[in-house]
Every structure is written in structure tokens, then in C-alpha cells.
Image 1 (spheres, rainbow, N blue to C red):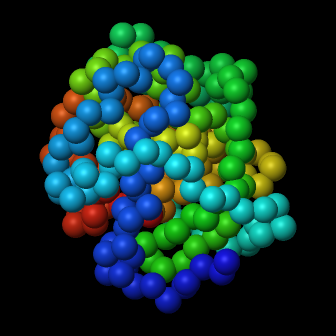
Image 2: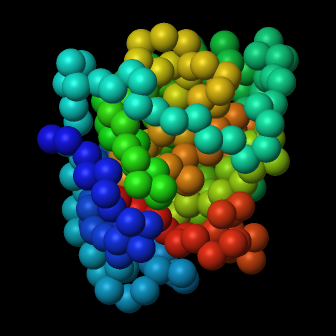
Length: 236
């Protein structure tokens, strides 16, 4: 299926979230998540919340021969940051029982997964990409979030920031990726770690992620673009 490259930003925001009825984690299979997925308060409206109560279903993926290696456009918030991958640490903190600081070796020693999904930009272009890395919910589980957690904040090495609802954060196809199309993730695409997920628009998929903070309250600083008027949920 070819992407519709003629969607306007307004139309994308009108349809965003329609597939997000699949976000609840009925298949988590681990007690650490019990009680984490409660009611998702503002800025979700009541209709959205009722849709989120439906069981989770994975988003259909693409085949290897459908990958579009040259279609992913590099957008940067500032300049590409310089990161020493040998000294890099991913911090997971906030309302957790076990705050963690993980090296790339630590992360690569965890269960690897890959997914071939469509990356959709609010500017109207899309690209089918294979991402490889670690399911974000596995990293969250290590940190042992408290039952009150509703949101995840993401901070990046270039100063970019964003926030997600916890259900999207724990979706089985939401990754912190360190590979792109079977190769090490290029720095311009967010190495050493970037968010990749088929259920969020591109501006929610932060590059150069250095910290994930789990919290029960959504700050007035919701995200770089969100604070300038872009939709917060930005689901697909």
C-alpha cells in the first residue's frame, strides 16, 4: 500500500489516533504493568478514552522488499549532537522503584527486536523503514514503574523533548532503535537511540534519546512542537 503524500497537516491531525484503540496492553504478560494503565487524563477527550479501552492489536507491518531506503527525510531540531557512544548512558527515572542508567552494551544485551513500519511526518511525507532495537516496555519494566504512572517524558541530547501517554510507551511495537534497515543507526537518524513506533506521528519519535522519565502528571511543557500548538497525542 502506497502512502498518501497529499494529506495536509490538518487532515493528518483529524485522523490521528484512530488506530490507537489498540494501545492498551492486554498482552503484556508481566505483573509490573498491572495498574499502570489507568484512565489517561487530559489532554485526551472522553471519546478517545473510551476507544482506548478496547483490547490491543498490533499494527500490520511491511515486508523487506517494501522498505524505502531513501524516503526517510532527516529533520533536525538544532544541529546534530556529538555523542560518545562508549560513554553514553540512557537514564530511566521518575516515579519508579528502580532508577537505571544503561550503557549501549547493556541495552544491546537485552532482547533484540525489529519491525518494518511506516514513518509518517506531519509535513505530508512517509517512509517505510525497518527499525531494530529494544522494546521500550522492556526497559520500563526494568525500572519498575509505580502504578500511578500515566506518562513518559523523553529528553534528547540536542535539547529536544516530548511526552507520551504510558499506553503508547508500552505498546509492543514502540522501540528504542539502534538499527535502521539492518545497519547501525546513522547519527543523523538519531544514533545511538531513537524512538520508533507505528502509532505516532514523526515529531513524537525523538532522536538521540538520553532520558526517559516516568510520571503521573503531565507538565505544562509537553513537547517542543506540542508547546507550539501541535497536537499532543499525535496518534496514527
